[in-house]
Image (cartoon, rainbow, N blue to C red; front, top):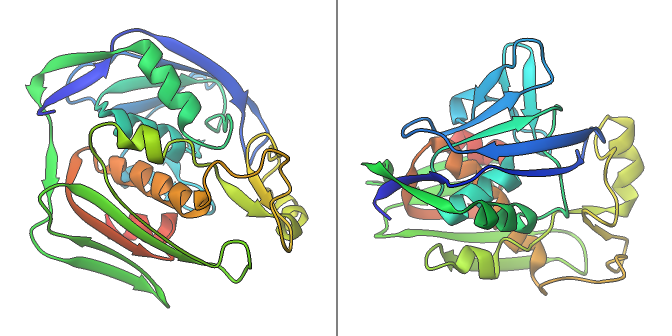
Length: 269
């Protein structure tokens, strides 16, 4: 689509933050052209507005956190991926807590919510970032690259020293609703042996088998198992889509990642 869009109707959801464990009510409302995605901390006295833009990223430890002054909104990537997957450029997101609800650990609940809201076509041309030459950032053996392409696609490789995950690769061209079919249901994941350590450091306080895939030394301990055999790499793609939407424009290029994460994604864009 060449024109900007927003949501047609106001929609709501509630949940807890994955890392803070703090309950949060979230409302998504229509917004005018060129406004982008804006988070509004309704629980703060001045109702601080934080635009979802790479310039406002203040932390990338285990999630993407946006900030303005002392105000923070963390774990925005799953909601941002849903906006990107449906091509929604402009929206206001009211929330009464410091972290976007984790829901089931994927983008599917947000995708469903946004489809319920409907999409309003607006009367201004969408912004695009067209990759003209290769751009690469590295960190040790990790790498993220943007290459010229006629469309938007992502190829991603993960490599974990774990018998269940090991090396996984996935390539997807984001078009014709395949984000919803192939990516948005992939959940965040973590290792059981790291859970207590993360909690001690202030992370994963809202984590559970209801909102994450949890892996012990040999298997997935969630009774329902995996949604895809390669759900792990698909979720990494989901995170990357959310991070790239922080450019405030549709990328026309090929995003190639090897063991990347939020920090390297942000460094690249």
